Length: 356
Ligand SMILES: [Zn+2]
Image (cartoon, rainbow, N blue to C red; front, side, top):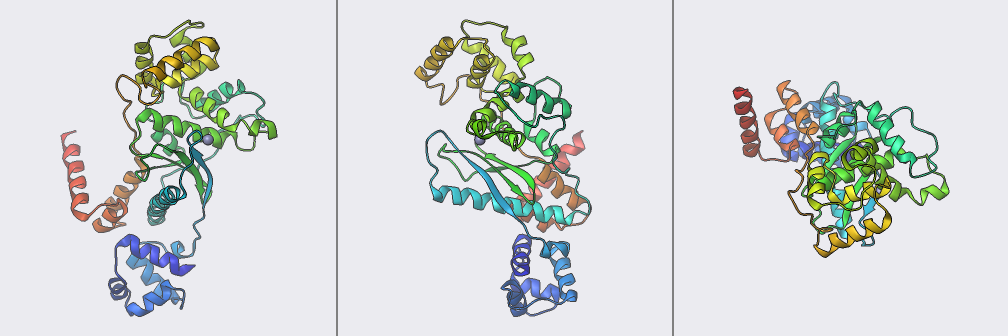
């Protein structure tokens, strides 16, 4: 167990066996034996290892449990196992770096995730989801306005958000899992912003629904999570304000404007209008047909909604660097950048800070 952890920390710090051995004052062979669990370092060596690798000694003993709770599939297409393994590998690597960093900071500024209070024990029908989305917004003090930065909103509340480039074929539909009990949501780094946001809200829906559905409702969980995502991004009261109570048709340009304001796709708005009975099923079907005719179900017209980016990890890296808890090269390693790239990033930050 300890062996793997030593190796992970060594790789994260970019040190060779020999380089680490020199810092610790043992032979490279000894390090290799520790890493292969063929021998156990003494407590003195353990301290030296922790110092050299810039982690706390607890890091070597803690078990990291990455448990995939759910992997999302897009419609009926199957994700090839190879792609899934690649995504998981990429995510695990990012998670590892995050945990290494959290271990370095004496006190993590990242809050532990807790479910909002006031949620009902059981959810019995789709319309209750509207109320639940409002409970979450109220508990999180989000008001009724559009959520400008959903990634930041989730990160602030202890949900780790990761993005991956390991998917390009459109079959991956987001992923949620837990690491040491903390929820993680993964979305595509190159997706349009509205798709990232809908997926994050959908995965949040799963976290909220967990344990609140009976057998029959459990079969509807995907649809319930979808409904939650829509209701969370565009609360019912706001949808009525924006669209009115009853509509017979929508101009595409109207939906473009709403998408820009709420970060919910045009298709998402149509869904909201149907779910809230603002338009009848037959109008909905006609509108969906129109979207298909123009290929808008694959790529919507008007401007794309800007992508979001997780910020907390970067914040923590620079926090640790500023407090001299990590070296510049370790910071670069954690950011997955070369030292040269990292220095450019750091300089830009200095330059922009100076102009404020
Ligand atoms: Zn789902």
